[in-house]
Image 1 (tube, rainbow, N blue to C red):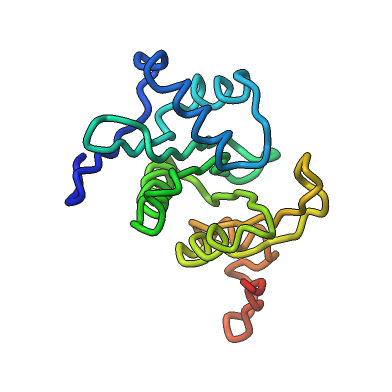
Image 2: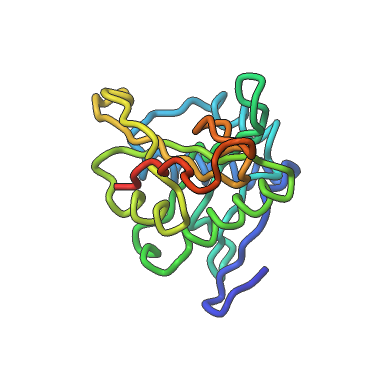
Length: 186
């Protein structure tokens, strides 16, 4: 689908791996602090390529990507996971990351996700603001999470009430007048 700025948003297509994989690796390695091997990309793209989306400029060059997965979490809720998100510096601030994440969220919801989780560095304020605008809540701080020694925040978007009640221990039999407080988002 083409937007007003001439950008095209497409679902990852495994038949075009030779076209896109090197560009995805380059973009992500420029933007994210974690060094990922080719096997990490293939792990996500081979199993959940249909949950990954690309933003292309008017020439068809990759300018943004979101890589996601969806599977049962520890025998419980269906958990979506946003593993990687990157947008070229010169294209930031134009809503590209928001659109990519929204596309991933929408398809995970269509596939019955109960919740969607991700991690981002505590220093990445732009990413934290993006996720909070989309309704994600900070669930915990992960100290020294990344190889560079930086800590992360885990964010969770509770898609279904059932996922929220599983997390909070609240169900329909409890007193509706005094529901539990949601975790703080700040």
